Length: 79
Image (cartoon, rainbow, N blue to C red; front, side, top):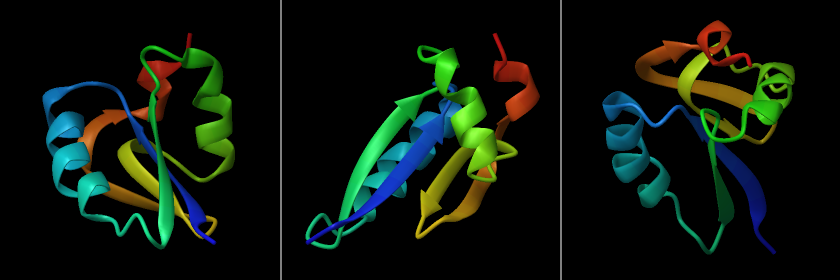
């Protein structure tokens, strides 16, 4: 059984680079990685904030938000 992981991003170059390196490196036998483009799904910004995301790209894994580099603050993604 796999654990859920969510990779939140905004589609910027920093986010896309992180997605290729980080999200693609996660073992699919252990984690089911959902990729969420907050620029295309602004309705999920509150969900990301509730998970502890303060900037993107970020990976939420095991209920903990891990911020990767810095692409954009979460405030910039609110609709």
